[in-house]
Length: 567
Image (cartoon, rainbow, N blue to C red; front, side, top):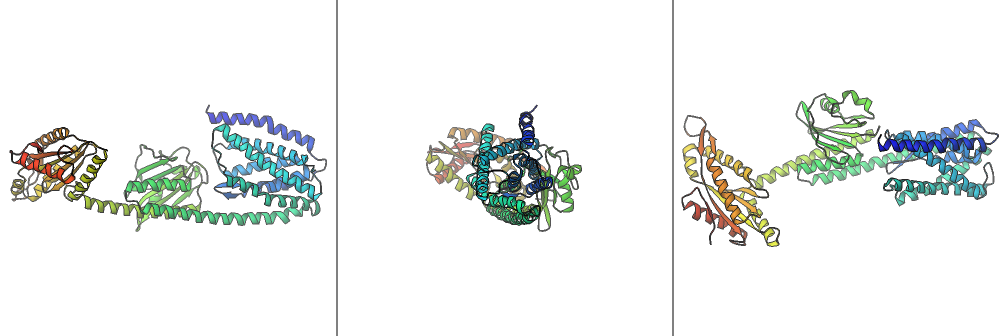
């Protein structure tokens, strides 16, 4: 049996030993002889309704149930107050909508509320206040002490619980101040309610209940508007952060992380659209990316496939609403689902699906905000692609796709500066040139020459050592920049490279003449090697030294060989 189940069973045993016997004892010993059961029933109804309409603060429900339980205590004592409070806990559990640990939370809250009722009632009697009294100042003192002791004990018990569990206390100083500030609302309301019950009677439930719930409704509507505005503000901030990123993968990573954080989603699935099917690009689960084996989803298959087919967003509050559409890859604890198409210029680029293990975790307003956030993402992604393509065009050779001379020069200065700072000990440069390349062009045509250059570029690229850089220097010349390569290591690598090129047969289709058939062509190369600090400590001198080694030591010595720079 899991640790969580043992914890719940332990709490149940403690609850069974404390709460039912305790309430039974007070029901027998403290229940007044005369009692208006209609009042008690209305207290229960008001307590549960109050729990059903909490005020949300920082994502947490705050219930002002004491405005109903405290008058019940002043009217009939601790037994009725305990009954009203314990029954209200059921409503509080429904409001939280947490399907996990529901029994655990019920037993814990029930035990805590029992203890709080007992301690607060004791404090009420200690200061001389009496249940059923109409002495205003005595009642005011008693109610104030009752509420203060109740709140202080509550925070004390919670702190003890978190320490016992080894958890961080989630309540900040602002939360504590806010809780004590509710005294301003609860005390006069509860005391007025009690006094009016003794003077006006049952009409007090209507006279105070209706304004109370109307006020709570207005506060909730205002809080909802503020919450939506906060969502929009945060979505705008995320959009701004994404817009300045120039790496596609970073844009997607940050978008998924920020979206999961904003919507408190346990799962985020990002699909790319391939016309009639979807490919899962990213799987984000509980604040971490995971690798999962995943089959492609056809259009109309699963929730994501249906959204692709209809191009309309969907929202589901619980698993049974979408379970019949689920694919085999859907997590077992997934409950709420929010799924939107990622569209731009009337084209669906992909599908975004958010999931939560809580029921009713997402609302309609979140769907609209997620749609807005998705638009930010698609625009930022396209911008990043454009920037990357432009950067590649400025840094890469259009033919070979290797780095160009401009990039090689910047990289060489960068690595030389690292050597001066002591980050690396050696820096070697290899310059390679194809032997008799003009003869290749004259025999087979320039397009065939270009094909050989491209094929050679792939060989050189694949052979590049870790942390090395390969680029096209110009024409048929290529340059390697090799940080932390000694001269001997660079010469050895160049020799292996020369043999690899010599043994490779390039397949080309000559573009001179009428016959268009593939032929095999072999080439050789001459290579020059220079090193810093052995040969120089200047970046451009290092490049010129490799060039001299290539032409004087290799080309003039007969080609198809490796030569190192000699002073």
